[in-house]
Image (cartoon, rainbow, N blue to C red; front, side, top):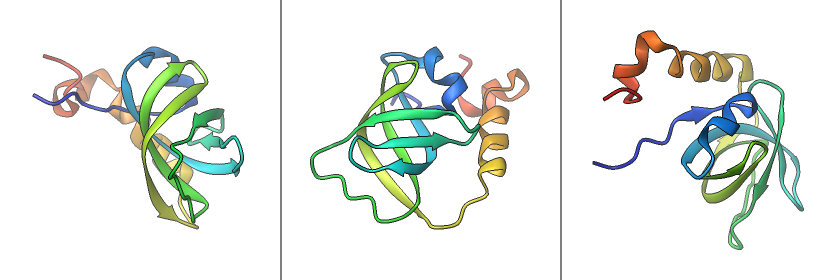
Length: 107
């Protein structure tokens, strides 16, 4: 079975060191790629050489290096408008113990 890549925000990133996650975020600085997570926290993303973000909002799929850094494996453009509060609500519901079985966080 493939590993599940949980959705995270900046506050939850440290719980997943060395694991693959999905971070929906807003691009802040493109050179080193600092992004703003759905909860408002900043995260540094180590880019793929061929990464080409063309919109303000992206979803980064990558491996967590530490509590504030992700190594990008893939990137999905999400457009120039996104309700980040709604995204953060989805992240928090993902981690709610009531839904652990549904999202695959429980055996």
